[in-house]
Length: 387
Image 1 (cartoon, rainbow, N blue to C red):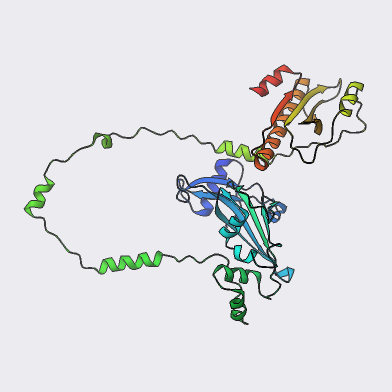
Image 2 (spheres, rainbow, N blue to C red):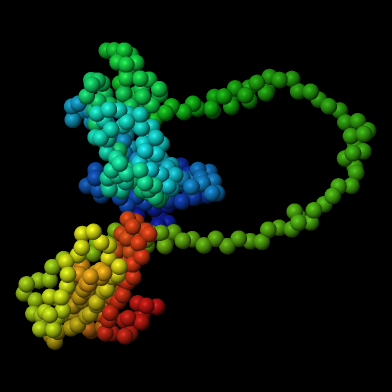
């Protein structure tokens, strides 16, 4: 993990700053993933997290995904709680137990007295202990594992987890734990640096006496024999056209982080015609055990004589038993002088709201089918949005 100040004026400048901070060449940075479900401490400080994929990290067909992982080791004293944060590669389909095994904490979380108190969260949503279904992991997802202290052993939680991961039993840990032992061992598995071995190999090669082979008449004659020439290898490859889709990725991040200022209840002071009152009275409460099968967006814009332009959006969620109020947006369109600009603003808010609903449904219930319908009275605005 590297902390640095990065300029985010545009996507190209941000990529360039990140490459300079990490010391990567232009073609070494293959992909950049922005974490949308950030930890609470990073949200409070408005800090963004980017996971960098280099060109040699993942091969073609590799089903692993880059995720941000927080291992929270709770201690007997709350002030001693510490968090190990890292970026990990996990399979795109994995269970709760698989997550614990991949992170090396399954042995600790399966201890009696710890099993029911060990919490696993994926994108801030807790995975119950009895839920062993496959979860879909995407790039830049966030996983947090909270491990409580072990009540029967007054040792640091991280020390016990390391010992169990390395095959030491609880009784062996109790015997090995003595005053003066280093409890600050890092969680990461130590990886041996092979750079010294390469230097040693090069030194050995220098010391080996080279055996010089003098060419004979047969060797020279063999080199003068005709060789087979493959024309396919001599024809240069056609030029490749690379399309930079980084702006699309940046636009996706901006749309995800765009807040929707909707209200759940209609204001009491709103003057509603009798026909609308009857229609609102026919709405049902959203069922607790049923997912919506459709979203209806009603958009409109207007201008009051001598006043400014306004825009409004109403969302109705369709269930098998009827329609339910999903919320509404009403806002003023600053610097607008014509009513059609209010129609444009209302349609834009409706599209952004629909994208939010679609993203939520796709991430949480991808197998559920749902439709989206837009109703408008300004044909020009509606056809532009449809296009």
